[in-house]
Image (cartoon, rainbow over all chains, first blue to last red; front, side):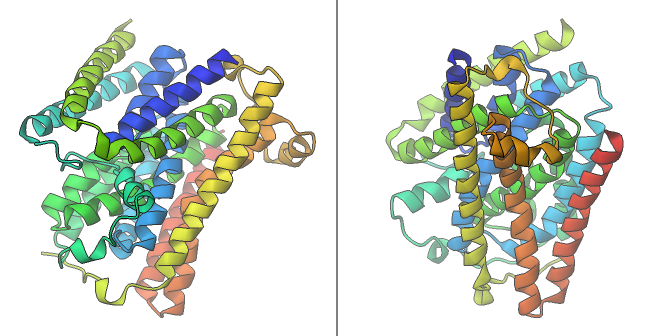
Length: 278
Length: 124
């Protein structure tokens, strides 16, 4: 019972941090399950994927209701993220777990670097361009009765669709290999390369996370890499944490939190590397 | 430069319905998982004891016997089904608005998902 509570609390912590910092929970769930609970990396990735679907689906629902997400663009890119996830989900079973751990450590390092850069320039803004699977923004505004977001979204025309499709395929592969939402790739891609406003890019990325993770999680599920006893408490914890985080977002000094998180990410990256070479 | 039109002027009304579908399925999944976790706790099952592998044929019996794995698997399936159902519902919505291109996009996404399932079944 104690292990279950710790797992639920760990998932909730991942959800709170992820939601406050605009990250999907996956980047924290995988290290939590591998380093703290000793699960195999692939099993942790499978559990992480279903947790990511759960938090993103709730938020994507709010985004769709409020017409913040660009459904047409999202679906055009989803075709490619899903294809990438199919590839990544298949490749994941061919790769050595140590290589996956090294890739995950590299991802953690990259996110830490991005976050440190954002923290240096941030002036305690609640949401920054580094945000990835920012499910909390929609949830926060929904819970707090915020304004309808559409008036704040400028008109835009999507460009570089082919580049977007290529990047979406890469995001799908990364998501399936590492158990993350892939927003760290999709949001900058849509915003910087495709001309989509940040708010819409974030919402659309969130919408795409669900189908991307679904395409790969079925592979993990049918190949026996998802343990329901681990996935249940973890997913509930992440969901509760993300909900709590969305309510705390406007009360927390995100600058301090970002720097704290950078340290946590770097420490985790080192631990993952040590695990890989051990 | 490849462009597509921004659809904000004619956002289909079914987007709201899709949003409600996603939210509804998520809460159903949370409820099922919560029941499963509560049963696990009541029966003293540790999360690290190694759960049963997914077997669709055992699901009805597990649910009838109030076995934790039954509710947990059903909750996990509901989670995975949520975005897939959203795409299927979008296909219907776009078909009603005669947007053939988006109907084909939706069908293609579902084909990729089906390919994922097929590849996993073959591999396992």
